[in-house]
Image 1 (cartoon, rainbow, N blue to C red):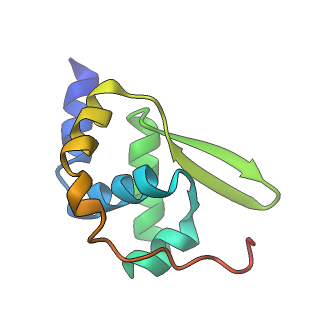
Image 2: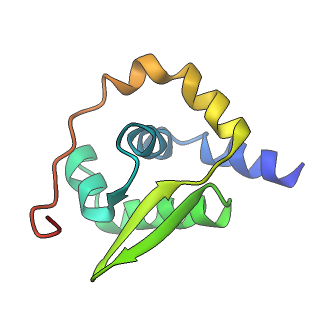
Length: 101
């Protein structure tokens, strides 16, 4: 039950839903790519990602000095993201972090 409540809290914020949608579309991204793409501050994006890690729906992987975020397998979350699939296309194209490439 607690996982469902945590997921509900994550989905209650439009910026977190956008972050999840971008991860669904792109597979893995770094913080700066979220910030540049969504025009959000780094502290705000980091706080959202921390909440998602604590809810056990986002995984991290370190590549060099970069921490990349990706979605963990979560059946409930996948069902929700399938339902917003059409809206994912309306999100801006990723502003790639050239320093990471």
